[in-house]
Length: 313
Image 1: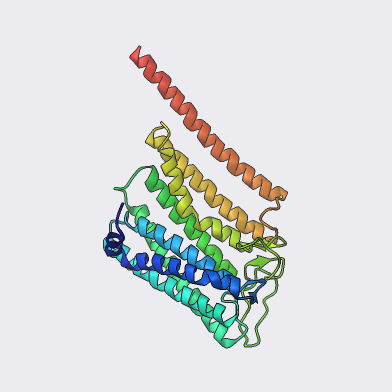
Image 2 (image 1 turned 90 degrees about the horizontal axis):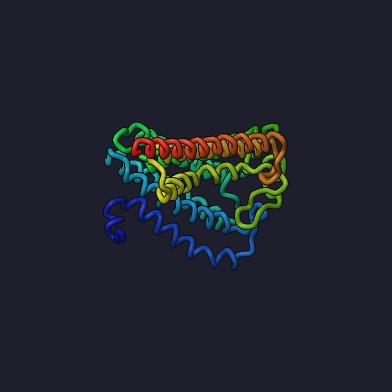
């Protein structure tokens, strides 16, 4: 178990990002109960709290993943770029919350439009840094095995999940483009087919009346944790490394497909928990594909076991 001082020496920008955002969460948590103001139907400090947790989780995971990047110069540059862009993002989110206005998709006033544009630029830079890291890991042929497949799959699917954020910021996905008083086009926003302050789940805020792009975004980002965890869990079973790699890659494909399914469902204005025939058919196809891979692995393992017994006899 590495000490904090060791982690700080290895990756100071991301370690400090994690610590700062966890500290920010502790500071803002009481404000969420004391401040009665609402923004888009939710307590004003809910968004900074959610982003503080999300930034901590992403930064901590990326810090671990960058340890597998062979080019340490690249890893250090990515760490600093991500830390700076997330710092800018969090400062602006907290600033807008303190002002009692929405931080995202708010272009009502020139200052709000400028803040939103800066946030969009910083996240675009982060996405490029994430993509560069993904390419570096994909090109590394010296690191093999189930975990390496899971990390690569997680990075790719997370990059796909990040793309959903660009859909949210682009105007026109939620009907005819409308313009703010200062002439800036309104972005699509989180919700399609319902108002942006429509009723939603507690804390997460996901819409229960319209399609919500945040669901696909959320699921995609957490591929960074779920796929490597799946690879680690597989190590507890007595199956070959080749079979574990196959299962990890199959789950990566299914996971990426689920992100796309959730995105298309939201774009059609359908809440994430409602299943129309297209959504049900898509999920069924994913389940059949993964079940087929699992059966293939099981039968192949049994046949190899029988072959080894015949050889021994």
